[in-house]
Amino acid sequence: MTRYLSIVLGTDTSFEELVSEIKYVFDIGLLTKDDKGRYIATGDCGKYKVIVIDKLDRTSELLCDEHYTLEFAMNSENDNYEYEDNIRNILYKGKIKWIRGVWNTINENETCKIIYPYDKQYKSKSYNDFIQIKSECFSGFISYL
Image 1 (cartoon, helix red, strand yellow):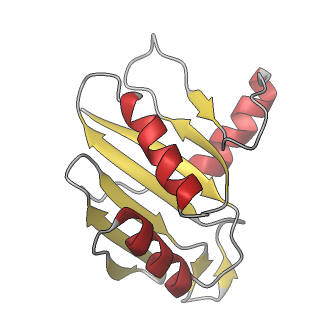
Image 2: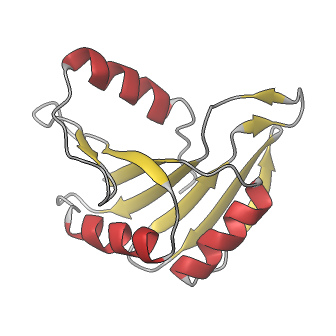
């Protein structure tokens, strides 16, 4: 089973600059591919795969998403929340701005877990807030594994 942590980024840089920043802070190589007009950069840290998803569709010059998305894919049936603090620390130390993250569910007994940067307050979300966040975070969901 693959578990995903999808993070909504809060940066206003270009996709190329963002990919360069992610390469640097995670100390990995990222390969960028054009997926039907939308750039996707992927790399492997060993513990998890890193996927950077562009917010722009270059075939029509339309904005697909309001924000860039940074996804982490872990191959495990176990909860991978132990990676959460590691990823949070890397983003914090690398000064990568992000808004929130959502862990996907693997089975129907789980609920999505929403995480926030260290500088945000942890708030419990209502079901309607959750549905809005889930649709935002997973609108660009792509599995390239």
